[in-house]
Length: 404
Image 1 (cartoon, rainbow, N blue to C red):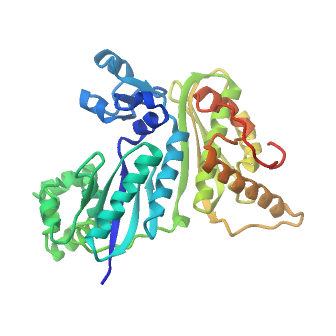
Image 2: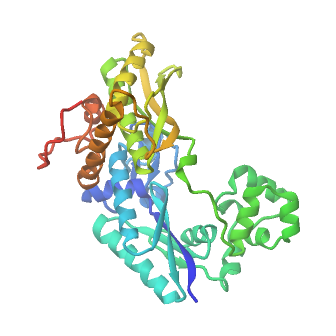
Image 3: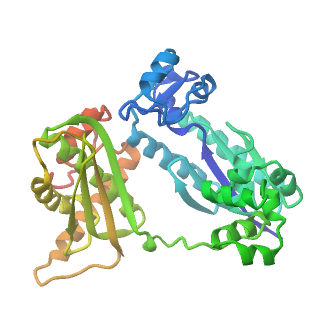
């Protein structure tokens, strides 16, 4: 009888690894990303071994570890590598659930551990040979156990937890290391003398259901090898958020370009899950930590940024204060409807909206192949060139329509 196994794929030092994959001269060297933020946002294992930690100020890193290579975060490359990594996983498993930019879950039906080993090894090999990065894989009967397994041998590891071996792993796993417990949950459970994952798993069902909230109960079931069905319907997503900091400036066009770039990326994420927003929220953050906000209500929900940009510019002009210097912008999409729902007015507005959305479906296909900067709105150009992530390349592509 086949069992349903969960396979967890976790990119090793993902951001730093992508930087090294893009620049072979960086491979095997201590790398830190986050130059644009002034703090370490990700580190290679070589940098971690030196003592660099997440959030460490760049000036401190330069002083203490002059051998460390500091890079700007290239989120477009990270997203592209993420998509390619997940596409490799899809070749070998029946179902894939994206969890974050550097990790995903897959479903495998088999009753043979040898088959699980084979699938894990093939995925690791193909990701290494095609993307020049490594991943660690954990396999178990539930997501929580698969996450335990993938933490066991990092980097470049492969661990399978079975019903027979689960207790051995859980006895050696601290309660705070369990996915979903969180800092406050760890404190509360330790106050109850629950120190390890095995301690939690071993509690009687009556005690779990009497004293603990739903999330702890779900984790308890999964630690006991019992799958918990969670709502994965993206139509219940409350919002899609995209923000990015940049070197301080009061240049109006540069600030708007950053805002436009955030809108493009947020809309691409909305298209990937088939959701159209009715509401768009924007903010500008000044160097003195003031937030200036505005809300846009769309008559027709859409995830085509070209249709939102005119509204975005109008509201931006209203809230932009030229005497301030800015360091960050952000866009939030909300009030979603599924993409098969649309509103038709008497003048064919829905047809015009659909044309734009079909255009961006084509652009997404090109971006998936050539990178997120292959085609973008002209209003985002200053953001692309300032980040250093854009360099013009000739592409043989068909005419897609008039540039917006």
